[in-house]
Length: 202
Image (cartoon, rainbow, N blue to C red):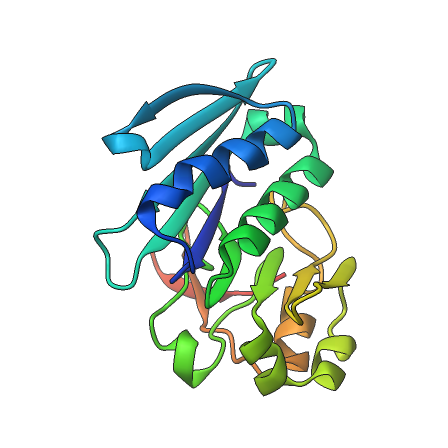
C-alpha cells in the first residue's frame, strides 16, 4: 500500500518559462483547475472534486527535473486512466531523457547514471525517449510483460505495468528481467526483532 504516486522526469526539453503553459494545458484537458502557483509558477497545484495534482519544475537542478505528486485519495478520485494520461502527457510535452513513476519510498526516482549507463529500475509508468528506444531495441520492449504499450509519433515509447501503483504491481520483476535490469535488493525489517530481511519485488 502507498500514500501517493509520484512522477519524475529527468532533463526535460523545455525551458523553465514554458513549463506553466505546458502544465496548465495538460491539466485543462483532464478538467483540472489551477488552485495555486508558487515559486514564479514553477510549482503548480491543480484540482477537481476533491482530487489534487501537484507539479514542480526544478530548474535549479543540473539537469532540470520535473516532479508530480498525486495522493492516494486523489488517485482514486481521478481514476488510474486519468493519471496514466497525465504522466504520458507530461512526458510527451516535455520530451525528457527518461521519465517514470515512483513510490513514497522513492523507489523509481531516476538516477543520473541512467541517462548514459542504462536503466536501474522500472515502475508502473515508464517513458523511453527515441534514443533510449534505439538503445534498448524494439524487440526487447515487445518482450516486456505490460498492461499497455504505446509508441509515440517521434519514436518514443510509453509502458504501463499491470496492476495499480497504489497496491503493489504485478510483473515488475519480469519486466526488469526482460529489459536486462537487475533490481537492487528490497530490504525490510522484522517488526519484532528489527533484523533486516530481503523482500520480494512485485
